Structure formats: structure tokens, C-alpha cells
Length: 469
Image (cartoon, rainbow, N blue to C red; front, side, top):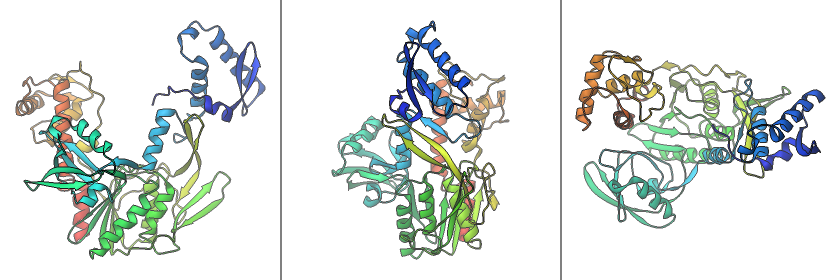
């Protein structure tokens, strides 16, 4: 991530200022030796007074200080200690906060330019109004989605606590409901089926524990005693929130996690008495390689405290067993730094190891394949090798087109498959992948993955199979 903002507000927290050589030079309190400090001062003086490009860099003093701070917080030993500039600090805080204003649903844009709902967040305006996964929103008040989704989303967000008319399609029938956009927490999704429930946790915010408890009570009130908790792609958040979530599933007084500080002191964190256990007969946890941190703490607690009821499905988790604290500075920037490690209830440390699943199931390759940014000038031609050729062929195969390989060599057979895709989507059938074709392919694959996440996704289907058995 780029670091470009001023950091005047944090200078006092990290250094003291002294006057010398005609300029203000920072003196770092934690310098290891006097010689190192002299070297730092000398380099700073050279760059600010003798460097050829010194007049070309705007706010050079701030820039040098920012880069020095960035260097201090960019340690190979600990990738989770970081400094955040203004934009990054805001984004990080908003992610942890989890709340935003709107109707409260996830979506993708279909070929008609309408919003297809992929999830509805618990207690959001959409949830309260009865919108469901799969509903297709065609318009809001006088705004039609096909005329511009950004305009519709912006309009919804501007109508906080005001009644709007939402037009949508469900099961092929046109419908309308009234709803009031409001602040909602975008971390908990709850779906009830005949004999089981599915709760998706996207991250762990300050509200996640409370909303998870409401979701569990909602399922329990419908007589449901089996639940799938989807933690895939949940990279963590507040450890306190993981403790709160566990408190809705574990008996009172059970250890959820242990914290070990830099001096070796261990503190046991037990269930939060503010939440009462909602008993379940069977719990399936979905996990993958992006399941990390607070998500892994929850997995460890449930696996070790409810071994007969809990089963994990998917792939090995990320393996982040450290805990960070955040420090905010007056200018709006911030940093987070590691204060200790967390351990499972029995004292295990999964840092850089992760949790292996009880039942190993690989995800769709189209969900996992990596690719580089595709530039407007880029072209993948037949019988050439390209980094993105692997993803190109994987995506074509996922959409049902006949490719003969899925590596970085774009074969003639795969080129013929691409011609068919281009023809099906109103693109000149050249057999080469340009920027226009790549964008359309990504959109089609994204739509298909969203549509099929509750039908053909192998990890989810295995979890359903096990929960129903």
C-alpha cells in the first residue's frame, strides 16, 4: 500500500526535535547507539539541504519522516505490525467498525444492469423488510438500476432513515416493498432452511457478537438445532468479538482463548456472561486459506470445547496466532503492533501453521486461481505463454467451454473455446483475449460463482451433506 499522507501529528509520539545544522532534525528516542543517531541526522541533513531533487519533493520533511516511520514498522519478523497513513487508517477503522449506511445487502450486477442480492445482513433495513438472497432489485423510487447502479446506490445512501420504495423480482414475479436505509453492521448473515441454519461471518467487528447471538436465537426460535458457520475469507478483526461469538455456542465459564504477552504472562479469556449459550446438536465450520486470526481463535475454541459436536470442512486456515493493538494519532494516522500471541484453550499455538480441516474439500479452482492486473494494451494470443493465461483457461472451463489445459500456455484449442465465449457475448470472435474480453469474462465468472455458492460450490455442498446426515 502506498504511503503518501502527512504525519506531523505522530512525530511527537516517535521522536523529539532538536535544532542543528540550520534545520530541525529528528532524534529517535530508541536509537541503539550515538553513532546510529549521528548517521540518521547526517542523512536527513544531506537530503534536505544538498540532495539535487530536494526542491522537487513536496513537503520533503514530512515525506522523509513518514518513510522513516514506515521503515520502523516494516519488519520482516512481524508482517502484522504496520503504520497506516490517513486513507489506510480510515479504511482499517471502517473495516473493524463494520458499519455503514444503506439497505444492508451484498450484490452483483447482472447482464440487465440490475442488482442481484447475494446476502442480506442481519437486522439491516433489507432484512427487516424481508428481502432475500436471489432477489433482483430493478429500481428504487424513480431510479432504475439499468440506468446506472452507482446512481442508485448513492441515492439509497442519501436517504438514511427515510422511506423508499424498492422494486424487485422474486421467482419471476415483480414485487415492491418499503424500506428505510439505516446504519447496519456488515458482518453477520443468517439464513434458515428446513432443518438447519447457515450463519456467515465476514469479519469480527464490535457488533458481531451481539448480531451473532441474535442470529442464533432466530434459528433456535424456529426449532433449528444444527448450524453451518461459514468463516471462509474471514481474515479476523477484534479478538473480543470472537470471544463474544463463542459465548453463544459454549457453556458459561469455558475458556475461549489464552493470551500470552511478551513477558510470558498468560491470561485466560472465558465466555462472556452477557451472552447465553444457544445449544446446537451439530456445528459445521467452513474454512479456507483466508480464514485467519479471530476466525481461527473461534475455530480453536469450538473444536476443543465441543469436540463431539463440531466438524471443520474446507482447507487449512491461514495461521495467524498473534494479537495486535491499534494506536491512533492526532493527525488521523495510526499504527497497529503485535502485543502477544493467542493460544487455544489447551495451549496450542497455530501461528504460521493454521488448522487443518477434519474433512478436506478444495474450493472451485475459479475461486482460487490468481491473476495479475490486465492492462488495456494487454493481449493473450493463441500459442503464447502469459501469466494470466492460466486464469483465462480456468475461467473458460468453469463456464463450460472446452479447453484442453489450464496452465500459462494458451493453446489453440483454448483459443477456439474463447472464440465461442466471445461470440456468445457479442464480442468479435478473434480467439485472442484483449481487455474487453477479459472484463466480460471476469464479470461472467463472478456472476456464476455468486449464483452457485449455495448450489454447486463443493465446500458448501459437503457441509450441507454432513449437516443433513
